[in-house]
Image (cartoon, rainbow, N blue to C red):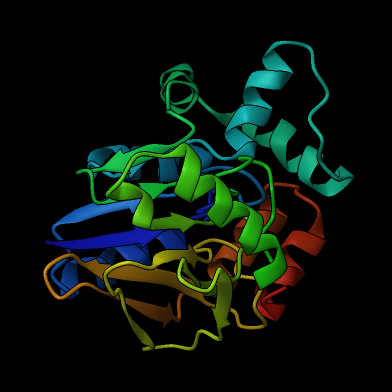
Length: 254
């Protein structure tokens, strides 16, 4: 089966539409999202409705949990720009879409084959930027989650694509650079963790929307970096009265 895995949509309709179109072109049979459907960009309702219409299986990210915290009178642990966007999202979402977001699980096992997490198997708010941080995540994945699904997981949260592998025989974690079109074999016995990046606010230095294709028959994961209408997304951010920095960073891939 071919799974399309993406993350961190962040209310970017143009990025989401591009990723979904490419997933269809590549023959994906199931669509999966590692959280943060909303935040930062100007189309929260449209993105939630499209995800629901397409039957995407989703988990919560920290921006969905931020909505819940606002409802509970808790100040989310976010920087001021993210908070301004979160308040915009909270005020813009309709009740049905908001309820659906708040009903999502924080993690998900897919067909006993692999897991979806937002930040890390160890902590949903944890950022994994390197092999040192990945080592702690692998420890949690290997010992706290059930096999065989714990041999492989997808994450997001950093907005940067990455590939990590843990070899139990020597207890070493390897990190591999990810570029457009790269394909990684998933071999028996090792544990793998792939960061799907972001289809709404990529921060790896490119104005791109990213997508992973997991082939459970061939047992490989392929990364795709896609061009989308960044200018349209930027114009919507400005028109909505969101911080201009959010539009600028889309163009910089930061």
